[in-house]
Length: 151
Image (tube, rainbow, N blue to C red; front, side):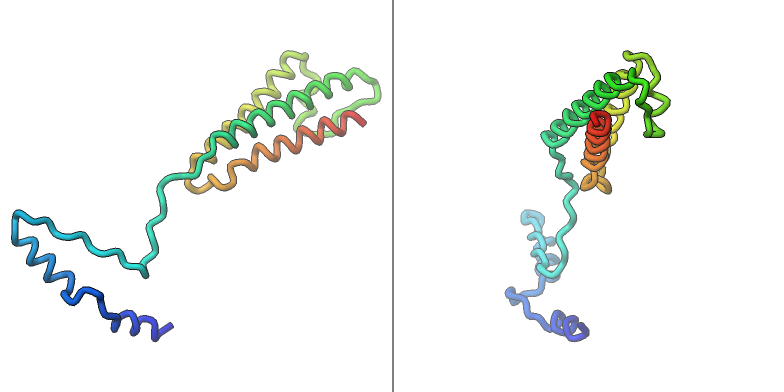
C-alpha cells in the first residue's frame, strides 16, 4: 500500500513534456486554446447524475397494486356479510365497516398513496433502488388478504 504511492510518483508519462508548461506556453498565444487535461485512469469516474428510472416497471407495478387492492376489497365485501367473519388486520378494521363506495374510495386512495410513494422514491438519488418495495409489499399484503378471506 505504501509502495503504490511511490510507484505512482515515479511513473513516467507517455508525453515527454510536462502538462503545466505546455498549458502556460499555449495560453500565451491568444489564437490557440489550451488542450484539455488527459483523464487520469487511477482516479474514480464521477458518479452519474442520472437515475435509472423505469416507467414501464412503475406502471406495471401500479396496475398490479390497483388490481390486488380491488380484488382484496371485493373479496372482503363478499365475506363481511357472513356472521362468522371478522377482520383481524388492525389497519383495515376501522375501514371494513364503511359503506361500500367509501370502502372502495379509501382503498383506492391508499393504493394511490403507495404508488405515489414509489414514484417519489424512484426519482430520488438515495432511494431509487428501493422504489419497488412499497408496491411489492402492498401487492403481497393485498393478495394475502384476498387469499385469507377465501378460506
